Image 1 (cartoon, rainbow, N blue to C red):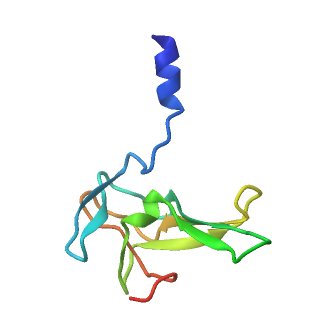
Image 2 (cartoon, rainbow, N blue to C red):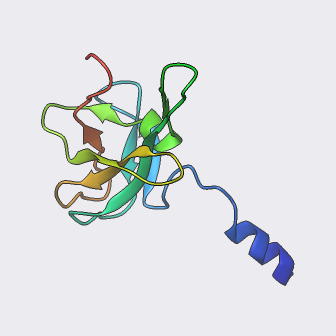
Length: 113
């Protein structure tokens, strides 16, 4: 039984436990807080850039970035980070306290709205 417990702790989780996907009033599906989220909370990686010497660099959307909708008055900001693994990645950070049930939104910078 202990072996099974350990393997479940190593499983990939596309979304933090504090978030869920539901129907959005903004567009299609969206990310929603399942509990209060504090200002400054780092929710995880939304996009990564793979640098490639042979062809154009590619930006990949992670599951966390796949369901967040645009707003001109967002409650989340996407910040650019640099690390050894991906070189460039973007994480989502809460701009203010977010209430349980509230949809998370970000101002799009990769896409035209």
